[in-house]
Length: 268
Image (cartoon, rainbow, N blue to C red):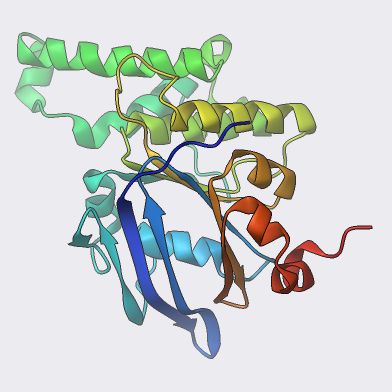
């Protein structure tokens, strides 16, 4: 699979420190996310990967360091404010609305982009109707792209695990993100489901998935499947015990002795 050509800096993480009591989750972690690239963050369990995503998306506030997005300091902003700026995410532990249908789960991602008020919504005319049509057009694109049309009216809680992963990805895409944070999107999937998810991620990165959105999001991927990471990512950041031990193109990282010792292991 061909990696996406990257551009200028989209997001910058600088000297991030995060502790929980005496446990250091992140110790001086720094990296950049470039426009139109797929950046992977890998490392052993407990290395700080999800903590880094939680800091970027505002769920955690680091004790030290800074995060800049499009030149703006977002380190102390609330999660909903960061989402409104254009950073969407999926979660390691699924966070779909189990009692809502697939369609409604994805539409919920459009909530913060809705501009009409209560009375306009009740009357449903003029600008309100046009805006609703645009929302629906994008959601239909997402359902078609992720092959979710057959389950559009089924409650998310009744869907297989791999399908719910796609629903969560669809909701994140509905937010029209500039940056998309994917926290282990292939965890718990079989080989066929992983191959499909890898294809979806590449198609999102290359703007092949929709006629509504013209600019593809920049992607940060946390994933344990090293084969997938090597195939679809432009660069890799490696964490171990909360510290960055390597950063670079896949081939360079794969050959790094420190990475092999800490995470990859020697090949037979």
